[in-house]
Length: 271
Length: 249
Ligand SMILES: Nc1ncnc2c1ncn2[C@@H]1O[C@H](COP(=O)(O)OP(=O)(O)O)[C@@H](O)[C@H]1O
Ligand SMILES: [Mg+2]
Image 1 (cartoon, each protein chain N blue to C red):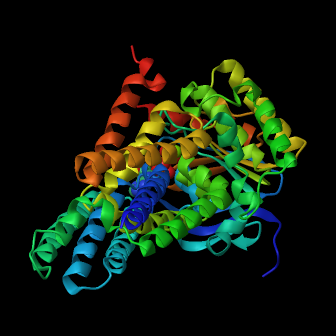
Image 2: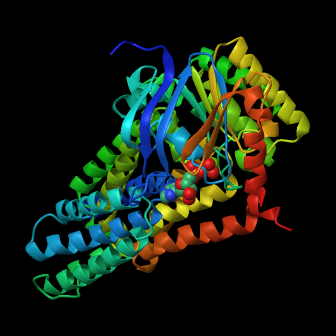
């Protein structure tokens, strides 16, 4: 009995740490490549997808992946062209996704707006299964290998996309790679952090790291670190206080960000 | 068709921006030989930047035929770009941008080195060398967002040089520089052209910004090439004098 509890606990904390790692790592690129609004939309699409899966009793992971990939495929080319309408379209799609998510939640069999359905809203410690862990390990490895192999290309693109393209890098390929990895990261993290807050885990640790460093190498090391620490502390808070885990994690990462702004060497120079 | 000896060969080129109906540059005919040093002048909005970006395929031309290194531009864009160094017209960089100057210079080589390869010691030596050419070696570990406009411009130039290009496209590279830096870069460009045989195509908004090594001037106006010839002839012709006078009004 107690052993079961402990293994459940270990699974959950590993899940939280891995979710922290994948979200705050991909976040570095999402922020710097100006993909924040599209990523925001994708994470809510993943949320709608998860609700859709629960409604039809299919694996919510699969349906959230499909929803967020689909969003990336639609929005990718639109934002690519950097036309003025892209923000309007993103906002439009975002509102549709939220509306769909609530409709699906309402249609989840059993008592709507309770138990299972609420978990995908704000996450849950104990909804992490063994399979989720395996998937998270898989994604963490892919992400790490992707960054190690394409570090120089990614850096060139983040400095200036036009210059990167002009020196012979196929930047479109990398934009879509980052979008798909983002879709993966949010879909896998939704059960832990919850659909409404998962995007904060992409943005907050990265934004915190950006407050301190001018060297990209340090950002790519510290952002995941901050993400992992936020998730671990958030997990413990949730465990002891019964606060929803997603909210705990996001509050902790937001506190880090607030402290970072306060202590940032980059901001001190503004007199 | 006989293989020609031009590094740039544009025939009847039109380039239209996406969503626009009217081409921004039209009926451009331009041949540049290997080893030339050419300046393009023209007032703001004449289409100079558009022309450069048509040459390296950042913009897709809608009419005509464009060959660079004897290869059609759009079909071979990734291949030809590896041999073209591009210095973009000055852009605003976020002062908190998380990149050091050496990383920016290094990023110029990325495409050429290719995927699945890391920087070798030689690549790094080449990067240091490119930085020293523009006198910016001491800035290697400085954040890119903390430079003055002129220093930033020099880093962008050294970024393009790190690529070891056969062709340099420079978009108003001297406009942010103070007098001594300008002379330094002009001298460098002359040397790159003469000694290293790099073909240079440089946009300049001002006749007084033309390095001595440049022997040919192209004048653009409203999307067309209105004059193309020997530097001294162009500078001394009444035509240009009148042209610029009219522009001022
Ligand atoms: N991205 C764009 N979309 C539409 N029109 C553009 C774009 N960039 C430039 N133009 C237009 O093309 C013309 C030529 O611009 P440009 O090539 O930048 O001129 P120059 O470099 O000579 O100042 C200008 O009238 C400008 O308004
Ligand atoms: Mg221009």
